[in-house]
Length: 300
Image (cartoon, rainbow, N blue to C red; front, top):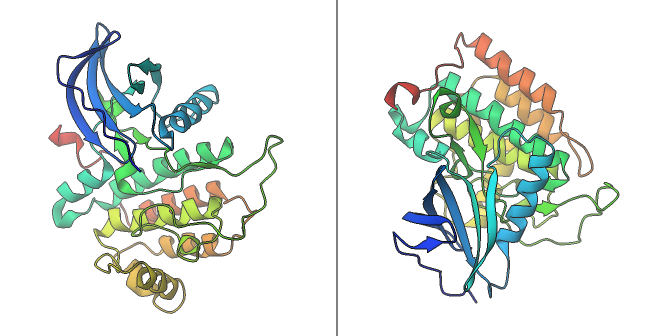
């Protein structure tokens, strides 16, 4: 049973952090824009009595990534407990790729921008996999751009590790798959394994990433209007077999090569990230487009 969400009013102080406004809320709790003498940040809160402590996972994963020099992640500036909630203060980021996609003509990005976002989004997953974690909810709503300055406007951040799972043991060995795993993630972008309730692995994050890449590129996924989870799973299977053209209509040919690579991977295999970057960069050349400037740069 979910606890009551912690609601903080603008002007409230949480230690040295002044609440400016609420940015949103999820199953875990709420996110606020806060400030102190050094600038503006995001503060996430979660009740101390929540059954599943999502923030703890978030803090742990981001701390590990910070130690390893992760390229696409928020920095943690403070964390603690205040009254009835735990909180973490991190980098304040900009708009999500979901919002930026919808702002584009035809609700999609230009090809160069979609590919640039795709490369950075996959780099984030590569770094996450390198510390032994799967994301398990890869989607455009969980990636954002930075806020201020050209470098930040061109940087993609990976967010939300509430569904992340460690796939290696303490010795760094990949854990054996569980016989059955419940559905995790978001139906539209979920990998086929998720529909089959199989244990997820690295290739599944990359499969979700490819669906996201298609949507950023064309504004569409062929199953987007189907509500039934089982039917969506069946549609995805067809797209990997006989209906490949339905998925990749309006996409560079290279996206099909990415799918072939992903489909050939098994549970214990590491995706060949370098092959993926090379293949997707080739799509820039073969379509005569440039990655930069990104679509939103001239609007900011």
